[in-house]
Length: 540
Image (cartoon, rainbow, N blue to C red):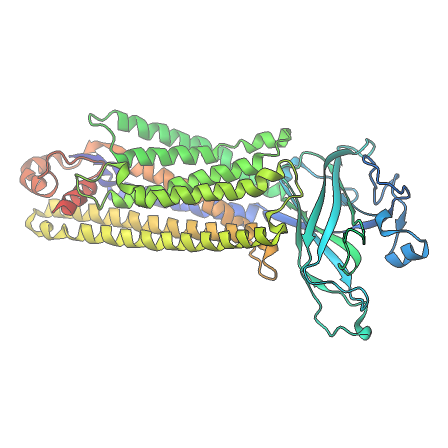
């Protein structure tokens, strides 16, 4: 009676394997908690007000806020009025990073958030639905002496959402509005050492450009690079991927080799386990190492696509894993049976891809584009995040229901156990316990995955949720990533065909019991005894 390793390996060895996996899981959390710094680092910048003496804006001219070639500066707009400098001749300049520092490809990506400091004036209040028109350009260079090279230039519109918390009277003039942070720029790669942002707020009363936006005093950027991924965290992340890739690849090859050595063809469950291993290997491959040496701005989008493929495969696997232990022998081993469950997962993953392409796909050409910049885009994005979170919770509840059905299906078989010899009864009780324990581990993994997915979606847009912000710790990232790898490793190891046969002597002496329990239907075949038992029970 050859089966899978999960049922033929001794309890002592299984416990040892479980303890080792648990220690690796604890280590993956500790790597993030004790070694890796925070995944992102926020740095705040105050834009310097430079004066462009040339009446017409000239492309290719850049204004440095500090250094040997720094621009002519003014302290505030009162000084500009006294010197008769027009608003169209003021350039807000921000150099990233701060003096005596430099950026690094290890930062991986850079997100810039914009905030206006707007003072209240009775004669110049912010109108309802006010929109700021921003003429912005970003340039780069790799040393302090070379000329700036333009990376992108765009004219963007951002709706102001500001609130004045005190009474609008002359006595309160000069107090500042409380304005929401605005999405401004996102780079999918930080390939250069120095970046320069030049921001203009062109004014045209005739065309109603930047009219009714209040008295802007300063522009602040949150360059949490604006937001860059912390270089130290990136190194730890790459090291984990580099270590885990060969580990999963080796167990994947070993698993499929054992499957192909069997006399029967692989069943659907075994094929899906192999596909899950392939997806885990795909997401593990540390292609990010190349982004350190090459200016691959699409790496952020590519990473999202890989993550989406893995999510779709993992969620589909859990459905099929439970379903194959519910179906009878006629229905199981057919992928078409699961189209009602797997179809929505594939559709949801496709929607995630479209949503990602609508923002990060466009940002490959225009890093200043943001789906959050318009009312329609903001509502769609918020609705998408909320719906995605609700669907993830519903999926988990449905998976819990399927696991409950599987447990009830298996319990129906326990009535056959008292009639067996003691050795056979203990054997099957052990199989049932091992399988139920694995299902509970699966539920735990699914719960953590759903929590991680929801928090990731909220964190992705946390700058757009006002006062509500979720901070994801490094340990959570490394812990969940390690959990996925350990779970996939365990599934492939435990469900690989065993080279041992349990109780050959007992099997010959109790063949009647064995037939009664698992082989009444002679063509039922599969990776484990539990798989066969549940198939027969479902048919009965």
